[in-house]
Length: 257
Image 1: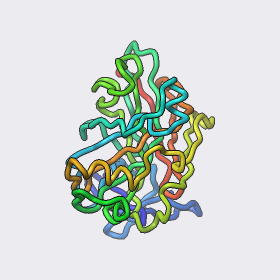
Image 2: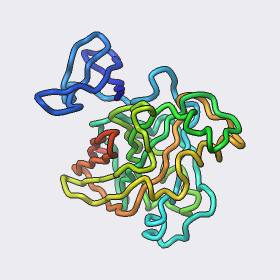
Image 3: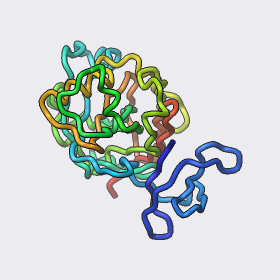
Image 4: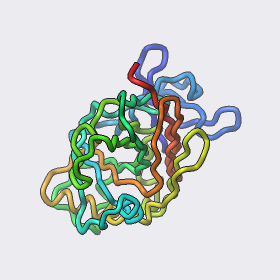
């Protein structure tokens, strides 16, 4: 099932994806039974229905083609960094491009949502600890980049720079998360395409790897990296990051003014 977290008529609601005018997922059925089209809602990050993330982990260079695009050797173990919740915004929201920057690009990413407490999990059991999935657009501002292997806070942890959504999809509805098509469009033009099958470190590996040295809690997020094909985004650009079976996340770039 596809779950949403939205604001409607001044109140926060939980709901599920619903057809509207013949289009699948074009509306949300709120928990009180009302069906509301996407455009009439204010969308919040679709965090797990019963938990909020204590920890947000993100992967760098987790697709070999993206590492090559950036002229880096593919890593031999996960290159991970931590993000704060302040970076998260919802579907159909605006991301601020700071004044004066030269290169700010999207990153279409599959997000793993931890479903239950995970500690020293074996790879064979890892999928049992995944509650679901969503889509992230994890913007990066290259101007501030000092080291691709350790991006600093101004690159990857800025307010409004990690749209999430639109849906939280139950893990049971995604039988093979490692074979999903990814696509990004900028103003309707396809600029990025890939597949989760090309991840260097797949979802079961990441659950096993992180749980070796830290406890993952229900609701924690793991952003799994992006394939190649990133381009600079300017104010007014509409970015759609889409993952097969999960959904299409719409985001618009705005200037600070």
